[in-house]
Structures are given as structure tokens and as C-alpha cells.
Length: 205
Ligand SMILES: *Cc1c(COP(=O)(O)O)cnc(C)c1O
Image 1 (spheres, rainbow, N blue to C red):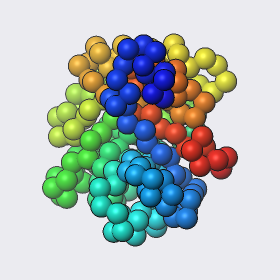
Image 2: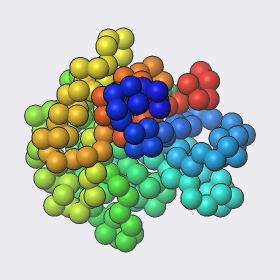
Image 3: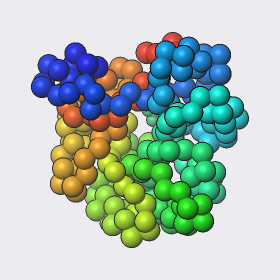
Image 4: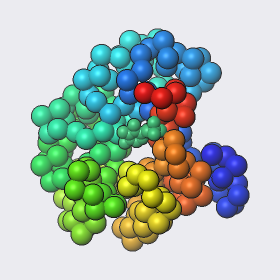
């Protein structure tokens, strides 16, 4: 990641590596925490609730990211547990998160997930819906810091990363959550500020 960032004149320290620990237990996560890593991601609220409170009690300062699709009825639990939510993608979820944040008095940083390859099976809002969703999220008091995407598998990710960066620029957003085990170098070169890596750190799931 650092080499890729430097190759285009970016400061590697400007990129947060989120270790995606979904499916892995505390014994797999502990070595990363011992090595000083503090940024972790999960894709399921229930799995994270079972795993992280104990780890957080042992080590203060852990920053927990939710990177998976979020059901509106889990919004309150997600707000309570996570520091960052990457998967805001529809008006009903914006409303649920707005309510949950007001009730909890806690406002995790949020990303709007964009369905950048227009894939029907994937989460994320359509590119055409982004301006309205962003306005709704801001009106509901969600702290939207940037955009997130998971580009189509098995084709070159670079054009999708470049498009996400352009959309963020257009809307005055500075944070880009993009890049996974197979394409983190490309993402680092194209402006990612948050890179989400699972299997390259933990092994195959
Ligand atoms: C699982 C997951 C990742 C990490 O994927 P790897 O290919 O294992 O690095 C990143 N982002 C999201 C949204 C995920 O669900």
C-alpha cells in the first residue's frame, strides 16, 4: 500500500488500512492488535456484537467499521457498536440511522455506498440516485464523510475507482473507501483514503 501510494506522490499515512475480520475469531485477531493495529471491519452486526465488546474492553482505541449491508431494524445496534458505517445506500436506512443517532447521542462517520458497476445483486445506491440520497443523509444529520464502493469482480477495478473519486470530488467529499485484497495497490494509487483488506491479512475465508 505504502509503495503504491508513494509511486503517485501520495502520503501513505493518509490511508487507513481496515483489517476485515469477518468470519475470524478473537484468536486470529489478537496478533494484529498486539502488533499495534487498531482499525477493524465487520460485515454483520450480530457477528460483530458477539466478538468485539470483549476485545474492545481489553484494548482501548479500537476503531470498528461496518462494511456490510445494514438492515434498517439493526440501525440502533450498528450505531451503538461501530465508529464508522460504510454502507449507507437507501432512504429508509438514512431515516433509521438518523433516528438511531439522535436517540443514542452518537454519530458514527458514514459513507454512502455507490453501486459503481450497476450490478443488480450488489448493495449501494445507483449513481443517478446519489445526489438525492446525499441530500437526505445530510438533512437527517448523518455525518457523511465520503463514498464507498465494491467494484465488479474479475474486471479491472481502476475505472470504477476513478469514477468513485470523481463522484466524491463533485460532491465535495474527501474520503474514499475503496480497495480490497485483490486491488488495494490500484486503490491506493487512485486516491483511496480507506482500504478494506480481509483475506490478504488473515488468509482465505
Ligand atoms: C469481505 C469484504 C472486504 C475484504 O475482502 P478481501 O477480498 O477478503 O480483502 C472488503 N470490503 C467488503 C465490503 C467486504 O465485505
